[in-house]
Amino acid sequence: MPILGAIADDVTGATDLAAMLVNAGARTVQLLGVPPADAESPDADAVVVSLKSRTAPVAWAVTDSLASLDRLLGWDARTIYFKVCSTFDSTDRGNIGPVADALREALGTRLVPVCPAFPANGRTVYQGHLFVGTALLNESGMENHPLTPMRDANLVRVLGRQTRERVGLVPFATVERGVEAVRAALAALENDSVAYAILDSVSDAQLATLGEAIADYRLMVGGSGLALGLPAAWRRRGWLSARGDAARLPHVPGRAAILAGSCSRTTLAQVAQARACFASFALDPLAHPDADALAAAAIDWSDRQAAEPTLLIYASASPERVAEVQAVLGRDRAGEIIEQAFATIAEALVARGVRRLIVAGGETSGAVVSRLGLARLVIGPTIDPGVPWTFAPERDLLLALKSGNFGTTDFFTKALTMLEARP
Image (cartoon, rainbow, N blue to C red; front, side, top):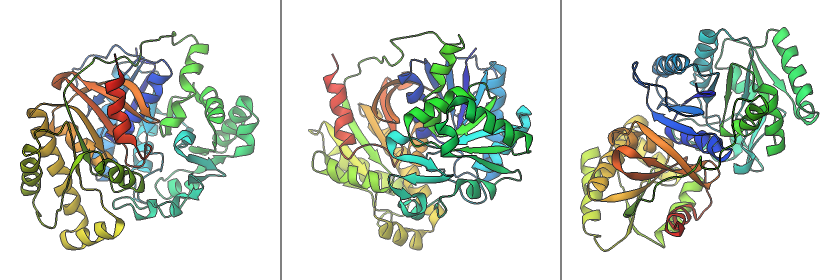
C-alpha cells in the first residue's frame, strides 16, 4: 500500500516530486499517463502519476485526474497529492482550481492545504504572494509564458478566480510559530467553511513544519517542495522505514542527446552555455512549418554528427522570437509543431543508439515520453533540485526530464559529467 499517491499535471513536475521523495528515502515509482484499470500497485512507498494536463482543456484535465485518483484509491494510497508547478502555472480558467475541486469532491474532504513553495529553487510564498528569487511572480519572466502567462503573484486571488470555493491564507507569522500553530490555523479556516488554505513558506525549515502539520490530510496541493517534510512525518508515525538505496540506478553507457523546448530564461541560459560545449542545431518552425519536416531537418543534421558523443537540439528562443513565431503560425499550432517534432527526433535518436537523453521543458518532455512509449520511470539521483536522473526499463534508457525553470546554468554539462563520474 503506497503511503502517497500523487497526480502531477506534467511529466517534469512528476519527476521533480519523485526526486524529492527519493532523496528523503522513500522508494518512488513514476507512472506515465493514467494507469490501466487492471494495473497492479507498484512496490513503492510513493506512486506518482504524471499527466499532460497542465494546459489541456479543463474537461480533459479533470477526467484524467479523476481516473488517476480511481487507480490510486484502488491501491489504497493513504494520501493524495495534486502536484502543480512551483510557479503555479494556470490561467484564470484553470486547470489547478477545477482539478482540485474535482479531487476534493471525489474524496469528500473539506479543507485542502495548498503551497507551491520550493525555496531551494527560489520559489517562496510570503503573505500569500509567490516570489521567484527576489521578484514577484508577475515580474519574474513568467508573465511572458507562452501558454500560462502569470500576471498576478497573489495566490489567494489566483486560485480564487479558478474555484467556486473560498480560499484562505496561513501567513508567515503563523508558520514561524510551529506545527501546532499551523494546525490551529487550518482548523479555524475549516470551521469558517474555507476550502483551500494557501500556506506561506520561505525556507526548508518551514516546509518541514508544514509537512508535519498536514501529513494526516487526505488531499494536498503543491509543488514538489511541499513534500520535503512528509517522509520524516511518515517515519514519526511509523509508516516509513529508513532506506539507503532509494536512488540507485543501473549504469547505462552510450551516446547522449539534449532536447530543449523550453523558452524560459533559465533554459535559454543553459542552452547558451551548452552550445559552447556540444554540437548544436536550432529548430526553426518558420523555415519548416510542419512537424515532420522540422524533425527531418534535425535528424538529417544529427546523422552527419557521427563523431560527436553529445548532440544539442533546441527550439528555445527569446520572448520576441516566440511572439514572432506565434504571430505567423498561431500559438497552439506553433507549440504542437515543436512538441511533435521533438517527439519524432527523440524516437529517431534512441533508435540510433542514444541511451542518455536530457529533455528541457514540461510540454516537450510529455511529448517525448509519450512517443517513446514509456510507462514507468525508476527515480534516481538528483542533478539539481527538482531534477533527477531516471531509468526507463522499456528502452534501457537514462532520462533526465527538466522543468524549464529549473537547474543551474551548467545543468546540461553537469548532468552528463555526473554519469561519467559514476563507478
